[in-house]
Amino acid sequence: MNRDPVIKLEAVDKRYGKNVVVDSMGLQVHGGECFVLVGHNGAGKTTVMKIMLGLTRPSAGQVQVLGEDPASHAFVGRRESLGYLPESASFYPHMTGRELLGYYARLKGVSRTEVARCLEQVGLQKAATGRLHTYSKGMRQRLGLAQAILGMPRLLFLDEPTTGLDPLLRRDFYQIIGDLRASGTTVVISSHALSEIEVQADRIAVVKHGRLVACGSLPDLGRQAGLPVRTRVAVAAGNATRIAGQLAAHTRIDRVNDRSVDLTCSEDNKMSVLRHIADLGDSVLDVSMTAPRLDEIYLHFMNGDGP
Ligand code: ATP
Image 1 (cartoon, rainbow, N blue to C red):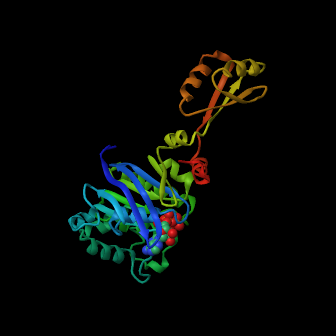
Image 2: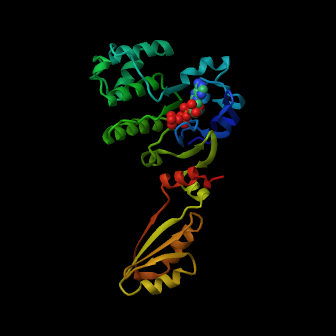
Image 3: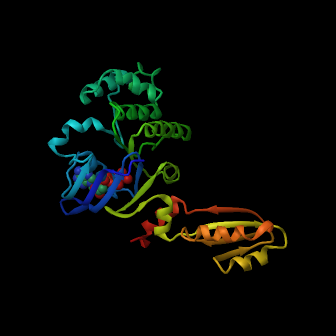
């Protein structure tokens, strides 16, 4: 991953009348990463994306995308570097998939050969001559993605891209995103699907009432939230009490059973606790650690315990 920021927001506000929908937002997205925005309905995620796309101007603050203000005239020639799948993309029902992509290709000023490439990349080449009113939700969403990747954009913005897709289609969708990332595309996703997105994200920004309340990798967020890493140590029968006693000097013991000891540690002392467990020898049979999940982290920040 390239550590240079391809997107930079500094002290960005967006107000509609008296309503502050983005409040002093500062963040950076690095080249090649999958950066995910999560937050409640109306938190401002779509607005932040539209600011990054240059579709709406901030009321205050600085925005740079690929080194330029995306809403400036200077950026017009670089628009093909950006791809966008809006939250509820709707298409002309009587066009075929191929016609629609051809239309967008002309609008974007990209070669028509891109149409066939994008249809193939999203697996719609066979359905390309079907009219859009005959497409399923999954096909329409893949067509939306094909539209977004016309011209091989360097930055791809996906607003709640898997809403309404069944689990297999979601998996296929992320497979396509994975292929794009492997070719160097930076991906910014807004999502409410916390359990699926935590696997995809390099870093996650938690947005609450227009403010960035936390940002980082999943372990970083667990650390920022101060949430425990839960650990179960499976032990040989008759050893649990002795082992719990030895580990109690290093971490908090939650439960002792005949054959297991449950304990919690923090992200920061996780490795040191693991070393102490390893020192206990053959009476330890197994260790499993469960780091805080994104849904726990999300609830922590949404419940107002965050910064
Ligand atoms: P969701 O998860 O429901 O899609 P979101 O986090 O994407 O929500 P936004 O769509 O960015 O939230 O909206 C943030 C706030 O800004 C909402 O209160 C919304 O009503 C308001 N808003 C967005 N666009 C406009 C606009 N053009 N004029 C006035 N208010 C707007």
